[in-house]
Image (cartoon, rainbow, N blue to C red; front, top):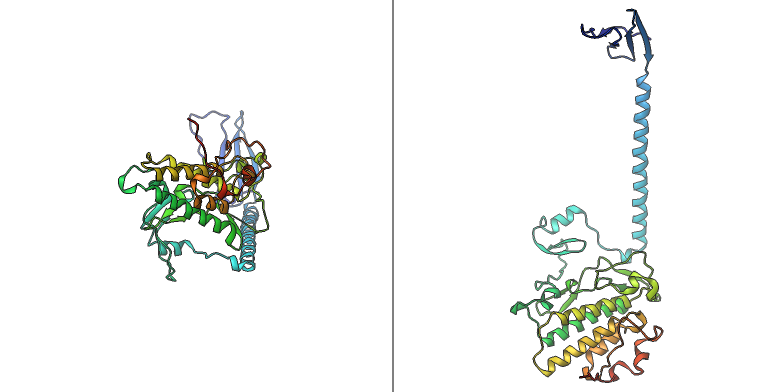
Length: 339
């Protein structure tokens, strides 16, 4: 096929005889390549290229691909909507980015920073009151050396009691059991009266009350507070006892961040918190108390508590905490410290 007209490139004077010369056509469907032979004769090669149908086919393929992707996304969205409709009793409130931007007044007031992002103060359009806790987290109170943030030992006992009650509520009093997986001082907020509030439910696991074991594919939590069984099934299965372990580490951290106690009353509180913390961090979940047992220990007399075994080595992992002592929690013997 020969184009209707050609624009031949002029051969420069300094080019050799074997230099190819290309003839360009005006916009059309063909082009011609002309080569100069050694004897000066022109050799022509014509290639017909049908661009129109090829481009049309390419456009149709791309359009079909986008159509398929949109259809798949629409099906996924419909599945999610059907799932939420089936479980609408448990359906959480959903907000668009524009809604959140309006609620937070364009992200004006930053409250804090969590493991999953920044937390901002906001006001819901339905005037639902959400508590705002100005005293920050337990982390800054328990380990702070600032005089205004020092907590007395009595208050330091009341705070773990409140946390334990909150965890017990999650484990036993909800329609479904809730495993928090991230109990630590940073996630315990304090109100005006220094009452603790559990926060950061980004890693929770919901399961029925009939279930005693939780299935997990990845470890959850913060290093230093994660129970051994969350990392390795060698230490039995994951259950609500994993939160007990995290609570025990929280107790011990609270004690470690305090200055020396002054009187006998403080010594008893320290002793009680230390013993409860050590019971909670037993290596095997079966050796740890339930949160109900923890509350009994915290409410009881510190002089009646028995020292737990080495938290990292259980003489018999099949024995529970009550079996190790042989008596109820509130009847355990006093610890006799060796000189």
